Length: 376
Image (cartoon, rainbow, N blue to C red; front, side, top):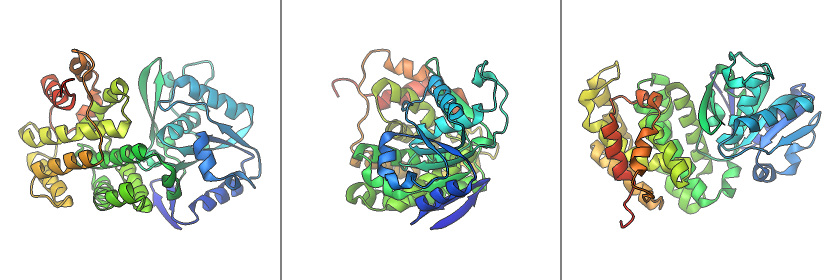
């Protein structure tokens, strides 16, 4: 078992990580625990994990893949009704987002909209245990919740879980498509983080390790059901990277692709990334990063070297071949207005993290390359 400090968090991985998480709960002094998890994550964890805690374990399964504000309200109500004093989230990013929001909203006024209230630090202990290798949510200080159908981003330093527990045994049970999509989410996060205008030496270090690890381990992970620990570690590193830098254009373009075509998030991000990467290389003169055009050019050269490529064209080709090898299809147009709807949906804030200016016409052109005509 390994322990590593990240900001205010302790990251626990390797053999015995789950047992260490149980030990933390037992020694926390908390009476009752709210476990925010899917039923499948609870099952794969093993019932013995939930036994021996000093108080009651209350399970909350009532949340969607894209968690709704009302679901967080229900989770918080259960937390209070059962006298819980601690949170444990187990699953994908959705479970962790719900737990993070419960923690943040707990000290707030129940009679007002939580999203409109001032955010204050909450000292509820939160242990996050990912059951997928992709989002890195266990090591980020932000969450997503949907209010009246609209995506709301919530951010506060206290949202970073106190403990991130990386148990790679969960990955054995992931469906193949989910393995592919979540792994690609981690890769996209790492690449986007590396060129983000908010990147730092620290974030680039995490991103670099994640990219190289996925480059070397993806085939064994997908084809041979191996390399679990490497991919889990890479996903966590990518999460740490975007916690500092945030994501950029490919993620900004991916969200509506997910909702319009029913693609998994990582799948949608993956098919957007080659187009934004090529656009970035072709528009260095439009650099918006305060560190300048030469810095941006050097950043792209470093990414190429990480992948063992001579130039961005080769790197983009490698990524495109990887998407093909994973058999992740591109969306097929449903209506004539698809591309316009997609281009109008892009979050300006995430585009602002991209190191070159992106116009509406540029978005339209990239989406036309991503969305296939029905006859193709």
